[in-house]
Length: 274
Image (cartoon, rainbow, N blue to C red; front, side):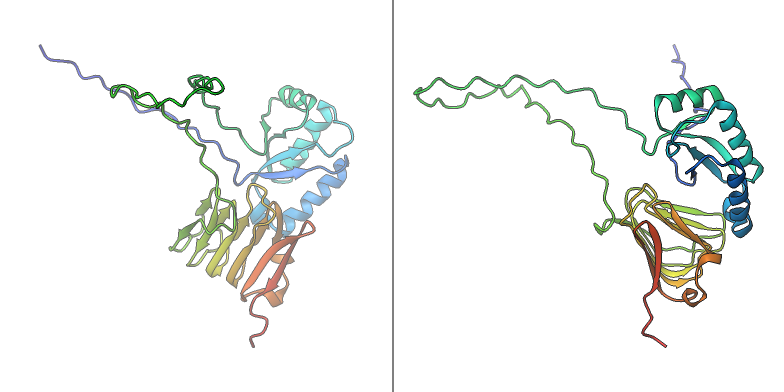
């Protein structure tokens, strides 16, 4: 009698968690008209960066949480500016209730991985009574395996550890390279419209004509090093500068970028050369 073959259909979807490429708009004071004006200015200076970019609204720096109609108006203003608000940043339980009322998601800075079930261990053997003569260790039967140790969590390499991701091919327009939990080293051109991202530092031994975002998960010690600098945008831990804000004397030169007092700094590395 022939055995029927069970065919398991391929899943329709695959879900992965990640927040790279999502901007965060931190509202420092409640000024809807000021918000509209500043977003229009940012769009005018870097339309390719901000147009239709997904964005999370952070209300945690306001003294009081706005009501639902006010937040709905803020989201509409952001959308009218050309950006795409996708949710609210995590805050208090009131913030969560507001997001539910608006039917938008809450975004946390980090997502927590599911916890493993606790591993049961045999109780420790009681200590021998005082003054008792030492006894030789008992042998376990050969058929009884020793208990397996608890699985250790895998550490995420920090920036500056020397553990990183290497990419040796040009990064073309529309492509994105992301080094999760580590540094990123690139040896070829990053074209206009391309994006390279790392949770640690970024080292570029070719020309940077697209975007470079280091410290993507908030590492303020991350740096960007570039041999030939023509960037559309660079960012470290969310602080960014666009092409129009970059001094002309830095363009085409070797540079490093870092954070100092919350400000994104850029300096030439070849300043001594003619």
